[in-house]
Length: 549
Image 1 (cartoon, rainbow, N blue to C red):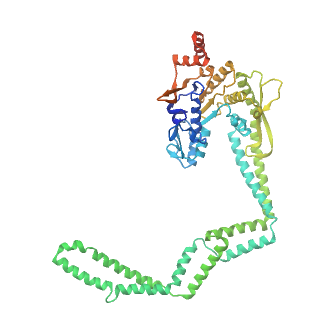
Image 2: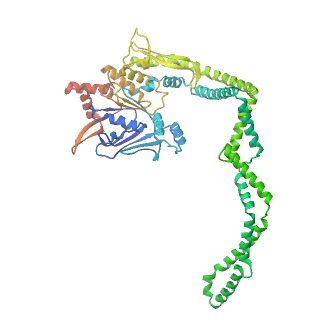
């Protein structure tokens, strides 16, 4: 769950530290008090794009930090590892900083992209407001809900693997069929390219060694001359080693007369040994050098051949070899297309058979569970005030197999008797769609793995008794999820396990929002305010709401 939310310099909030409990958390307050700031802060955590207009007036930046405690972090860890980050080990800290010139985001103190934050957010928080129901209207999302309710994960995995294989083989077959239209001119070009590169008998990695050998062969005369001159300078009668021998004799005499000089002359012996080793090495090098004009010409011809092929087929020897392999594969496909077409067609048929088997299993699971899910959602809707409504989950066959199967689904809803059921996307009332969403969430409570659900005034435009039902539904969801409800209805607030109030105050000429928990008499007082009246009657009603909840 979300254990801590810290906000600094966001809109009217200068500084807020909110420790949340489990179950249903109710948030109330006057209109304009700053309840929307909490939603705005969570949206920043979820990876929504930030506007510098969110920064509190007079400040340079705003920050939001959220700490999530996860009993099962496998899905989150997979995303982190994919992005090159360490697993979260049960605790995830998300921090977002919005500045006047730049925005930054961090996960467990490591900088991340906005895309990764958004991906993580999809697994952490399910946020719904009066206009935040696009996911529910998506038929793809509806299909995911049906599969979750059916427990069809293994069937869906089998389908996706079979579908990927079938698509890959089908694409390969289509490409091979297109190859039949290759012209004779293209065939001749491909044959020439393969033949020319094969004739060069190229070896991966030979380029550098070849150039080194060619350079030595071309410069052999100068190398012999230079190495001989260096040897002569070292070993002639008046050479360096001869003169160093005289220096050694003088130094030994110094050391006899004044032993303390040894500390200064210790490096001489080493220098002499190293120069003697240099002389031996140069002699060996000179003996290895051979002046062979024919070899130099052969090597130069080889270098020129490789350079010519690189100009035609690629920047490096590896590119040339890769070009040859691609041309050979294309030529093989064209020249042997009959045999290959037959083989690929058989593979496509086998893949399609495997796809059909997986598809039948998935379709059967969906058709079996759809009526049960529809009945469960309809039951939840009746509790939310739709006493005579109808709900159906239509399994709609597709014309072609897709990544999700041979069919899609369409949630259909009829709020009033005698009216035809319509797809959810055709329902205009935000109040209706909000309650439908809550009914769906309630029906799928056991299958939904999202830790935190946030309902932002989804009880708008409903009556008092329905509002109480909405509150009870959210409280029931709180048994399996952490639920935050921002509400204006005392009937909803009374069902919360924890109740927080947001209010505005003026300090030092500045307006700021603050959030604090209410319990006992303070909570009754807040419910009385929400009921819109004072006196003993309103207080008794507030106390009754709490007692009944």
